[in-house]
Length: 205
Image 1 (cartoon, rainbow, N blue to C red):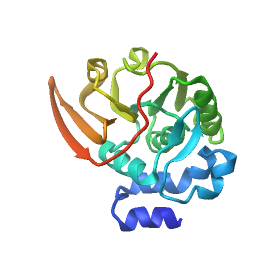
Image 2 (cartoon, rainbow, N blue to C red):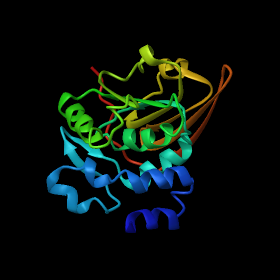
Image 3 (cartoon, rainbow, N blue to C red):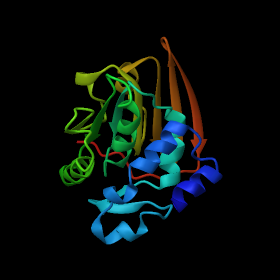
Image 4 (cartoon, one colour):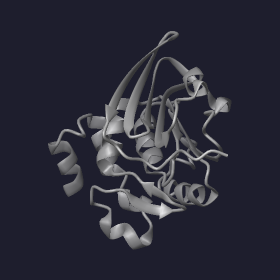
């Protein structure tokens, strides 16, 4: 609770639905055993294979920019530990049709993340689909999406991601040392950049 209180006080968490998700989906359930005692700290933590579970402040900021809503279909690229997938699932599941497609390319991390999300009922209920795949071209099989979240740093924003987004949709992605927010208005894209962040790079095959 201290961590969430801090994120609310510093106004990184504002949206009531996102705050509720942070309260219900415990970060410690997505952390390796040797680091669980650090679950309430505002720092990234290793999850194996050179990957990390993101800093809570960064996750809060990205979800606030993404504005996930009940009933939406969201693509979660670089799902890693599964924490963001479960947070999103908690929100989208509040209305029929809500679904999260979680993509992770590294097999060991995929297994870790999927097992973590299994601690909740989202996979069993069909709300989260965890897929081991290269996400650099998105995932056309389940497109189009209302929102796309990218938690690993991309060197570029692939055109495939934009094509798989519904009109009125939004991409929130780490991009080099920034977070970019891309809004799709019919065939036009409006981009806003927030510098000063750090991420592990997006892995491709």
